[in-house]
Length: 263
Length: 349
Image (cartoon, rainbow over all chains, first blue to last red; front, side, top):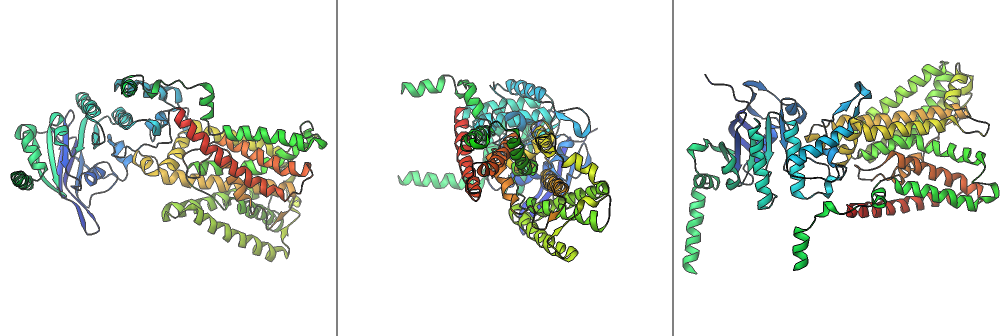
């Protein structure tokens, strides 16, 4: 007996005017698993996660949560289904404080109905605790996010998503803007989230970041899926080769060899 | 070399000590607060002949003026923090007062249901402004400028057609006028402090609470700070902005009601020009023109400052035409100060 996948994208296509952004792409993820979506720039990674997170709607294909077909009209809608997303641009407002950003769109409330107010004290406490769990000791939750470093902002964004995204966490290029050490911290956090039973979708163009944490790899190239591989069917070299489009990389190596020979 | 190493492994910027003064200077409303105090004491000197500092009657005068600016400046500030402008907020005072006058004197309605209809009119105009801005994605500056001119024409032509004059008069002949006048337009004490000063302070408290403590306040900041990011995390940005436009027009309608009750008549040109005063109050109060940052408390001090200038120039027996020059000067000084303070504050952190 097979259980339905927690989140499944089934033969998704997306067009912008006459541009085909995605053509017949499928992927799935389960609780306690990391599915990596790999692809070079312009491969359609961003379009794909925008569909998974409710920013865009697919032109063809279906989205299924727990085996039931769903249609997200907005990111809020996706979040109601337990799908939380950390965007490439982090979806944070630089002029707002850390705690306001952390709870933006999901403010903890006290009181009744329209007279309810934000529980500021507990909001700040939660922010301190959650960021501490990620190894970041913030001095002041009232600090504006615009004053944080790139790595710190990333940590706030991810811990926010983990705190709220109980079931599926979508990470859009979380390591691309970071140095080696900070990227390592983020990868560790992805595994922590996985071990807590979260289904993680990790979008990246870096196979060396994807391979150590991924259970399953979907490779996109020019809006097409090159395949959906479980980890046991693919090794790191194979992944790098697939990512670069195989033959193209071989040709490139050949050309480089030729240049070397001339020198 | 040694320095580089030290700064890399030493305590990072999070451990830099931030003194209470630097912390205070990070508040967006500090400039307006200090400015209001400076203006108060400046006229204390220039208008010492009329005992500016000590005479409660003088204070009653400038708080009356400040309340006229400050009441509508509260939602204008929130709207600005939400990233939008409303240039029709001034003319709405005239439209609403005239509508109340028409309902009271020509339709012979009791003043209370007439006031309810006027507030409803405010909600509708605000909704039209908001939905147009959100749907067309045009700058609110242009959309509300159009509303401004449409209403200005309606006010003038409508009043003339109705009365043959440029004003609607005898509003106090309406049923229920006295009770409405008591709550909205009467004097509080024998020094003639207006009851609208309480409305001004009350609305400021409500506005400041909304911004600081409510979830709607969080949405206002984010709608102005980065609407795309806000939408991505699930903030209903469009609804937030529409609500802000509706609040602005409705409070302007309330101001129109207060003026109509106070003056017992309404000029067709009433309110025109005030839209910029409201924006000056908000900017002086620390609101950024680009949205996402500002203060309702600061806006109260901004309104107080402009009210003091308006009356102080008269009390100092200067030519009152200088008022505009002062308003411009205050606006410019406030923008410079806010930019400086904010830059310093972010460095201090």
